[in-house]
Image (tube, rainbow, N blue to C red; front, side, top):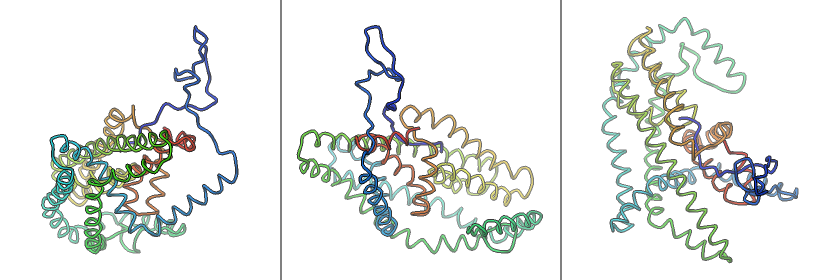
Length: 384
C-alpha cells in the first residue's frame, strides 16, 4: 500500500513568498490572498510545551497499560467509520437506525464467517503439508545456513531474536501453527467485544457529539465541534472505504496469480495479501517473503519458484505507484517518514493490531491538528 493518509488543507508557512497582482492585492504561493492564509501559531511559553509533553507521555502510558481495553474500542471506531455510510444509506430508505446497525454488524459477521468457511480447507491442507515439505526446503537452503546463522548472531547482538539455532530458516511451521491456534480463543473474545462496541457506536455514537455541543458555552465553539466531527468522519470514512476496496482488488489479483502459478489454495493467499496490504511498506515486504517461501515449497528451488513472489511484487508496484496515488493523492497526503515512524511506534505499543491501525490513527491526528488552531503547526509538519 502506498504512503497513505488524509486530506490536507492548503496550508503554507509564514515565510511564503508573496506577489502583487495588478490591483495590488498580495498573493501567497498557492494563489490565495495573504489575509486568507491559515494561521499556524507556535507555543510561546515553555510551560505550555512541558505540560503538553507530560500530558502526552501520560496518555501514551495509559494506552500501553490499558491496551487490552483500548484496542477493541479503537478497532470498533474504525469499523464504525467504515460502516457508517451503510447505516446512513439504510436510514435514507426508512430503515430504523438500530436495525441498520444490526445489519452492518451482521454483514461483518457474514464476511468473516464466509472467509472462514472458504479458507478452512486450504489452511488445513497447508498445515498438513508444511511439516513434510519444510525439511526438504531447508535441505535445499543448506548452502545459506551459515549466512542465516550469522544474521541471527548479528541480530542477537542488538537485542533482536529472530529464530532458533538450527536449520537454514529462522522459524518452524509447527511453532507458527501453535501460536496461531493458541491465540484463537483470545481473538474470538476480542472480536465479540469489538462487535458489541461497534453496534452501540453505530446506534448511539452521535449522542456524544450532541452532549458536547450542549456543554460548550459559545456558538462558535459549538459550530467548530460539529464541523470537526463531520470533517474527521467524512475524510476517514472515504479513506477507509477506498483503501479497503483497493486492498480487496490486490487480494483478488494475488489469488488469481496463485491460481495461474498452480499454488494450492489461491483464496488463502488472496486473503493474506489483502490483510498485509493494510500495513504500509512492511506488509508488502513480508508478503514478498511469504510468496517466496510458498513458491519454494510448491515448485522447489528453481527459477519458477520466484514467479509467485515476482508477480505479487508487480501487483504491489502497480497498486502503490499508480492506482493508490491516482485515487488518493489529490486529497490524502501524509509525510512518508511520519507514516513509517507511526507504523514502528504503534507496532511497539500494540503489536500487529497497532501496525494495522497506525495510519488511521495518524490520519485522525492530522485531521484534528489541521482543524484546531493551537495544533495547526504540528499538522503542517505531518503534511506530505
